[in-house]
Image 1 (spheres, rainbow, N blue to C red):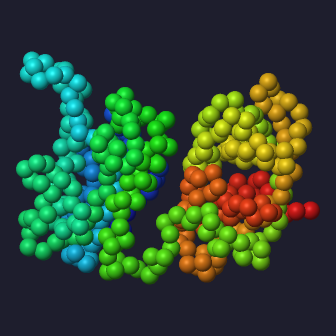
Image 2: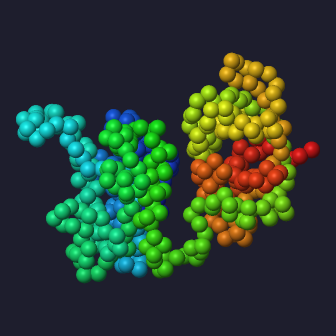
Image 3: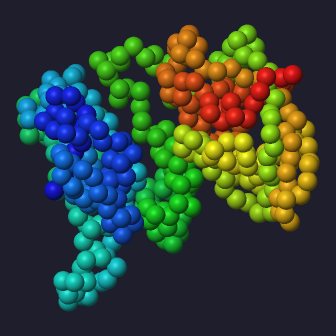
Length: 399
């Protein structure tokens, strides 16, 4: 049966389950059958085994979240109403399910052979039902089409007044929809994009999502009643051209000049390849190396994160020591950087939240948290983030 976790101290099972770790709950919630093994947890002092809730009626958990927030059986019991609750649901892309077999073959298909088709159909049905219920108890500006018979349910509610403000953003991974965004994909590429286990498409799907968002996400959707003091002038992503105005004064007044210590390993990219920099905090950024770029691996940190240095910048930042193998060599960093730690006080003065995103020069977003460092070279030509642990294990004050 579906189980929804929350950490309200007045919850019915809070005392028995308050020691559960977030990492274990996340692992349990993403244990999709055939992709990952199930996860065993101790639930209310008893053993329990979990798989991904996406194969339940809560594939889209929005309706369950609304019920947890409002029903009397849960401890939150928030007040319902258009100006009291605001729920935003963001999809990861969907498509119209198509059976692999023709109609005649489906009629004759044995029950056991339906097994391959049923999970996707069930997840799609559960998502549509959740969407239909939520749209019928709210009044969204851009309602999603449910089907040809029900339509979008615009001005068609099952209650007199909306119980919440609700928005759903998603994109159909279909040829016509993607063409409207400027993409031309053949059937083989569409099939590849729909396969959720295909990690090679992450970069392209991220780009598609950004392009779709510029057309569908509007500031007017976020009602003034839910503005809790954060200014809408704060961008969701701080672009590179804005970093200088925001951060340079703080770098030059409260920051310092630093130099790297230790050594790094580096190799030349002999073909285009995607490099994901994974630090102690998870994925920091993803970028694509061109032929001739250097792939540098930091040997001074626990994570040993890799990153890309353009060929024309590498010789000014690293000095050759010795060759390790046919592909790799050891180098001593020789470049300097200017940096400042983003303290709570600096973020407050900049009117920035504790967590936000910047777009560095390589045009792949970097997620920043309070305590990280904002860094630039001495010529102040670009700005980027280095996590706290990676910074203190890589840099020291200039001698």
